[in-house]
Image 1 (cartoon, chains in turn green, orange):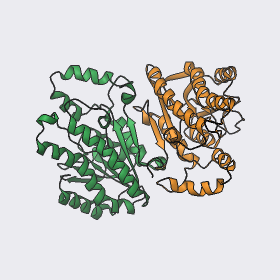
Image 2 (cartoon, helix red, strand yellow):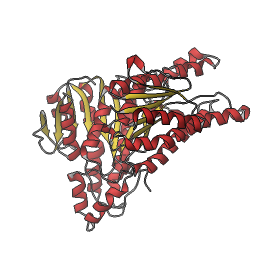
Image 3 (tube, one colour):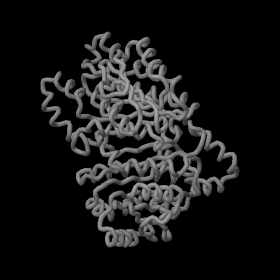
Image 4 (cartoon, chains in turn orange, blue):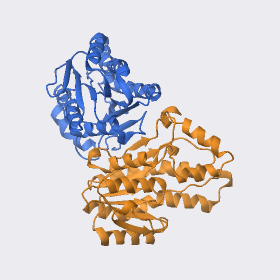
Length: 242
Length: 235
């Protein structure tokens, strides 16, 4: 069976991605802060890992190598958010955002590429965001990291192409997930923002996590064999409407 | 997109077109071809000129209800701003842009709610190749048309997107290269212009079209899917 490594596997998009990859016949290696479990009885490996710690990532990929020997799809979903304007941002909070959202992808690629080279699927999919293209008030660190994800995707696509590995990103708009609920809960008027968020999309609603996951699955599949270095917007027309 | 029904495909006789006809049929859908040339493999075939609105209207009336529309038809012509004949410019724009718009116009009343429209742009919308001013302009215009139409069709839950190929191994490419004195040298170099080191096969573009047509892309609208093997990323 092909093997998919999914970071941020315990979150909304991560859980949905785990489910759709399992449906597509993948064995799962699931990475999150605490041990993530494969959904619905799917086979797999759950790994607790700190994506900001090179040793922790290396250990996780050693375990994946021991269990599976090769990886077909590396799916970097893990990401955190931090609400603070630049003027009030603690340097440690800024560093943490960069470490997890961008550095984590660097580390999984660094330790994952040798395993991807041995696999048949040879695909990396990174979670970007429309926030890499438009500024969201009070989230400068998130906006910066998500733009960086796309630049890293391009750079890695260039480097990995010679090894036959494709690297792409998916950029969702608002997604109906815990991550969004948590961000909205920090604001003064979550309900109003929730309604505004729906209206910000041409399709008049947020994405369900599965809709993002299915786009990830397509990019990770052989059907996307000529797609590399790209960002696929799964944003219900958010960018077009903006 | 429904799991059964008809997909109308303009430019169905070309390399990407035929590949799309086959993918559509493999997915259990009916393929209705609109092309200058008849398409024997398609379930329905209408030979017409996409510069002729009446012919387009008649064809869509005959085809009936649609689960999707794929606009692939396009033409190319050599010429720089300083020497391109007006009529050549108008012909390229008529087929590539107006033909796309007219196909959407006449497909529109027949598209089911939740249907999907896929237009074909090109990496040419993002770069300039000296000597193809009309083609580059037309492919940029297709992206504008896609973005404009995506808002209009969203009210009905119809998604509108575009695919943008790089070099594709098709008769279209063969014809363009045959017009050039150093065509074979350009073909030899074309593969290396992509990160993946080769041109696309038409089926690879058709698979991207199928993704955008399908419910797998249920939250994808108003966007461009670049299927270029890393062409735009390579310098």
